[in-house]
Image (cartoon, rainbow, N blue to C red; front, side, top):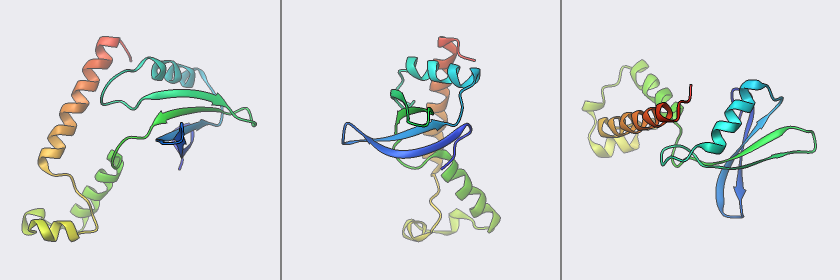
Length: 130
């Protein structure tokens, strides 16, 4: 798939760790800053930076921990689709919810995500990242 500044691939690191390889088509000042920040980040709710390399085509590639589960875009798209169809989650019991093709976050899961996001924002503020 494609990220904001290039392509993203799945891979393996040290044969057993699932990773994402973020490949930059070109490197600008903003990208260099992003790479420098990745190298410094150490937080439970931020993917780990394993390293970087330059491939044969002279593209810079970052090797990052693959986040567990689906990315937040997946859930946002599903939530939008669910609302677009005019479905009301309260009308479904647990078994019926599991049969739905659309995976939605529960209120509890949403609150946990918001708390984790706030924790990361506090971490960024303490590190003085902008």
